[in-house]
Structure formats: structure tokens, C-alpha cells
Image (tube, rainbow, N blue to C red; front, side, top):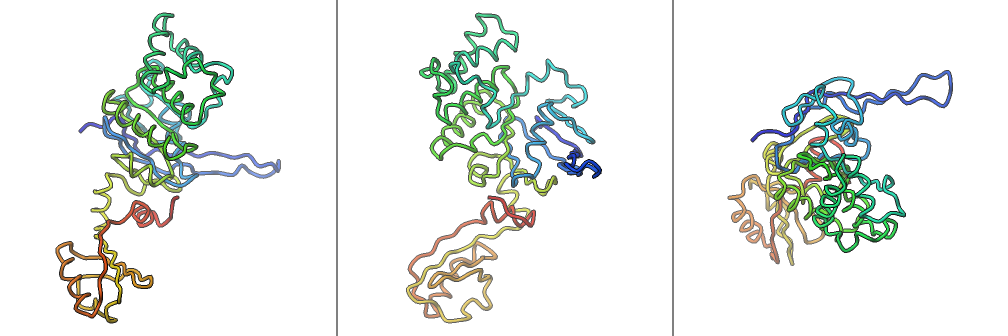
Length: 321
């Protein structure tokens, strides 16, 4: 599978002026030798806490910020050779709606931005209605932007990002201000209409673990300006030799030391509830049998895999939300 985006050894330093005139500017290493790739026609996620460098990467790929070192290859074109015309292949959507005109309608706002792309009057009308239909805003097209809900505003932001019919869509925390229901609506739009229907490659950044796990095909762990890991959730678990875990609930706990000699690690206990890590999935029946044989009265048992939060912490040594 070819990659739509390949980033190679990119670094970025910001110099923040001091309010005290004689002090030197504070140096912030936003990105340190960052390398990763985004497979074509998939959803990749930059996952990390606030200040990790996610937005800086998005801005570099959108052409808003220049890196101090390194290179990026976008749709086979080196970053240094990207022209303004080529940039129409890249759409950018953020969580900031302040660039819209609040007194204008949704249609009028999109019509204004479509004019910046050089569409003719007829092309503008057709393109705007096509995108309003795609994001389910046709019925709200004549409503002033200031009356839009947070979810409707985000839909219009996505529609604007699609005006140039981009092959790559960059999303900077696209659902940060939305309630869970509105988040699911946006996720469905991205997955079903942008990726599956349009065959668009999506790179989005978030600090929301649930969003990353639900939406991303490919995860990129970023913290303190460094990449710690990348890959699918299953491959990341495999890289860390992540093992299945069991939650055992008892009416009466088994005798102390019941797990000794078994291929299991006791990870926690809360009243009559035990959490254990299993070395091999095939050993689960014998582990349950041993707990019952040690005078334990088992009520329920269920297994689960290491969470995305735990994986992120194990790779980076730090936590995200």
C-alpha cells in the first residue's frame, strides 16, 4: 500500500520573545526529528497531549509553517516543490470557526470561499450545494452562521475544506467542542463519505483516546515533539507483547497464593474482584479452574485487551486524556 504522506526527520523550533527586553528569547523545540507516514485512503491519527506538537505538524503539511529541517513527501511530491496549485489537493479543517462571517448564511459563507478558488458563478452554486448536501446542511443553508449549533458549524468547516476536492484532508481536533452525539455524526461523515466514498486520505490530531480508538486506522503516538510509535492498534499491542487480561469477580475469593506456579500475573484487587494478566490465551481455562479449586466462588469472568491509554503510557512514559 502506497503512502499519501511521508514525513522524514522534520524539526521545528519556535523562539518566544521575553517580555523583559534584555533576556534572550525562550527556545521551544516543537518537533524533534519527526518521521512517520500516512497510508493512502486511510484515517491516520496524531495522538498526544496538548503541547505535543500535533498542530505544528498539521500546519507544516498545510503550508502555513515551514520546518527548520527535514522533508515531507505529499502525494509523491517533495515538500519543497509543492506549488500553490498543488495545495488545492490538501484540505484543512480546524475547530476554530472565527474565520466565518457570522451574519452571513451557511450558503453565503461557502459561496465566498468558493470564489477564492476561482470557480465561475455556476460552478460555485453547484459546488456549494453539492457540499452542503454531503454534510447534511441543505435545510440549514439559508440560516445565519451565528444560529448554527456547534455540530453544524463543524460540518460547515468540513465542507469548506472540501471545496477544492482535496485528496488529503487535515483535521486539527475536529470534534473538540462537540457533545458525544455530534462527535459520532462527524465521525460517520469522515469515515463513510470522505474516506470510503471520496477515497480521501485523512490525518487528524486529537488528545481524545476514545476518538482515536473509534476513528483511526493508523495511530501515531506523539509527545514532547517526538514520535514514540506508529501503527494499527493491533500492531502496537503486538509490538509491546500486550497480553489479554481477565476480570474475575467472586462471591468468595480463592485462597491466598492460588496463582503461584500458573502462567498469570496478578495486577490488582478490589474487594472480591481480581484483575490478572494472562501470559497465553490458551491458559485461561486452567487459570479459572485453579481459582475455583482454591475455594473461590466465581460469579463472572470476562477478558479485555490493554487499553489505548495504557499503550500510550507504556510507549511514552506519560499519559494523555
